[in-house]
Length: 246
Image (tube, rainbow, N blue to C red; front, side, top):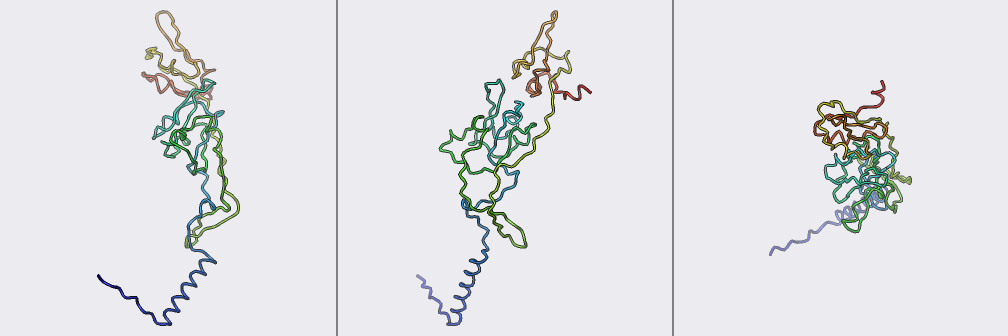
């Protein structure tokens, strides 16, 4: 067993070390050099494009299923609503907060927030149906100041009493009006997949002589594109209404 002897300092060295410690403590008390945020009493200021909890605006949704198709974690499920439209629901037990769904949505029906600390009791509660996506969860804000990292030679913390806005204003996309058309009727095999997949029953099949043809009601069709993706012969296409009129 090796016994380590306690070093004996000279009086001046001991005084100098104590003064250095006192000076360091006084300096930290006046101008702290720490970059640690005391959450939840302090909250970091986040950018407007922060990928947090997702909100949904059903009045803008066109039930195009793009959010569900693009989700890499299979966290979005489309559910049939009372108005015969399909709206997304999110399973936050699967969601990786990539926000591909928000970036893909053509009508800004999905919106980002800066909420990142939602508490759930169990995994089942993490499944968020459409009706719970319309309004944000109950928020309890405990922070007294907002903290922002500032690069000025060194990293310093800038604190302000103004609380960060958790719901940034996102300018909605201009909606492009489209509807489905059959671009190659001779190749259509009248399988009926498009008819059965249409969420608003805008597609029907009618028999003319011994042939069956598609009929698309452009007044009902709102361009979700589900029939275009489901057609096995690739004879359907979305056409912009303004282009067709031109």
